[in-house]
Amino acid sequence: MISPNTNHSRCKQRGLSKALSALLLACAVMAGGSGAGGQSGNAAEEEQPTSPGVAISSGSQSPFSGSVPEGQATDRVLPISFKEAIDRALRNNLGLLIGSDNLLAAQGRRWQELSHLLPNVSAAATQSVTQIDLEGLGFRFSFPGVGTVIGPVGTFDARAYVTAPIFDWHAIQRERAARARVSAAQYDYKNARELVVLATGNVYLLTIAAGARVDAAQAQVETAQALFSRAKDQQTAGITPAIDSLRAQVEFQTRQQQLIVARNNYAKQKLQLARTIGLPSGQEFNLTDRAPYEPLAPMSQEEALRRALNDRSDYLSAVQQVLGAERFRRAATAEHYPTLGFSGNYGAAGVNIGNSHGVFLAGATLGIPIFSGGRAHADALEAEAALRQAKQQVENLRGQIDYEVRSALLDLNAASDQVQVARSSLDLANQTLEQARDRFSAGVADNLEVVQAQETVAAANENYIASLYSHNVAKVALARAIGFAEQGVRQYLEGK
Image 1 (tube, rainbow, N blue to C red):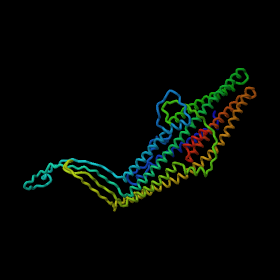
Image 2 (image 1 turned 135 degrees about the vertical axis):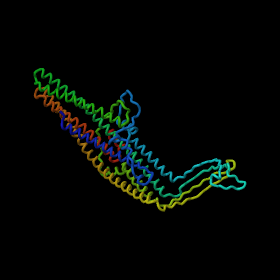
Image 3 (image 1 turned 60 degrees about the vertical axis):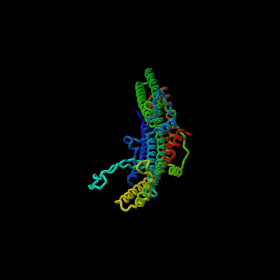
Image 4 (image 1 turned 30 degrees about the horizontal axis):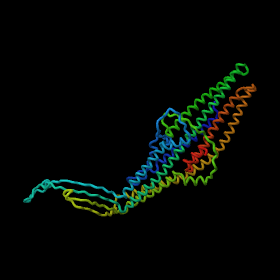
């Protein structure tokens, strides 16, 4: 039989894990959507973000739960510390690799926009021979002494061509917008690093908790086996009835079943950790760290909120997205403005390369848009809509950050108290089990008290494991909420 308290603790832990997974998925969607919009075509196409992080993932799975395996599996068992897991994840996690590619793509789009403001230089050389048939061109008459076929005539032309914009406010604003997109992508990459640390910390903590459950279940099996052997001996001696032996045997087999489940869950959790940090398939490893308990220095809500708005990479990225949208709107408006450009060429021309002389052409062009069928107006309207959406997303993110900070502080305070209570309850449960065993050995009571005490110890163990996980994951969530995940998670979970 399984205690209701045990079920409650496991459901609570699964709830925390699912909540953190949902946070990772939401952040992945935001990171994939920001800084990845195409920048060719009209303003609407520029402002529509793509979501490569979501497209690559299967179903609703976050890319931060996957990785690109590093190296080949070996026969030896690798010791994986918390620091080693973080370092491997920062090299191999799929979410971070996608973030790196998004940054590279944003830099490419910025260069694409910059190319419209830089000179274009090319060169060409041509040597040709031409023969003309006048009758073929429609000349049906002839002149004395002039044939109907002219040529062959040789021509040579070699030149360098230059085109350069002198003033194009539309292109200038688009380049500035693309530059803001690069800044947003850089913040997205930093945010992806924090999400990798967050995901790795969560999975490592879940694996530690699963390993602790295996140890607890193994200890409970050994205790139940000892009690079953004692009950069997006392039944053989005629001291206790057969029901005590049967009850002890049922309890022993129940604990064996729970140990099988715990070992299976631990093995599966290790597989998930290996996927997150990029271990090669089939590589055996053991965890070298255990769940630390280190009370966190108190932090006021005002200080946490201030740090979050100053340091959260996703918020800073959203601000840069607003800046980029504003400049794309200015670029759309600037489609009505005149442009000024320069074009020219210089080279040599003649019958052949040995009989040529210098030639050149230089000129400036003033382009004045008069009527473009309403395209500029349409681009301006779409850019305005994209700007409004970007501003709304920033305000929504401010509210979300406020919620995450306050929730993380509440969870941290509650989890700290839970650890203290769970530790005390576990000590009391062990004392109760010891006294029940003494009473049963002395023949004062049957082993029903012992079985009930074993259930209490099992529930207290589960509550203590779950409370440690809750406390550490609350510290992880707080580090993420205030924009301190990459350094904070290491500091909090390493107990330094």
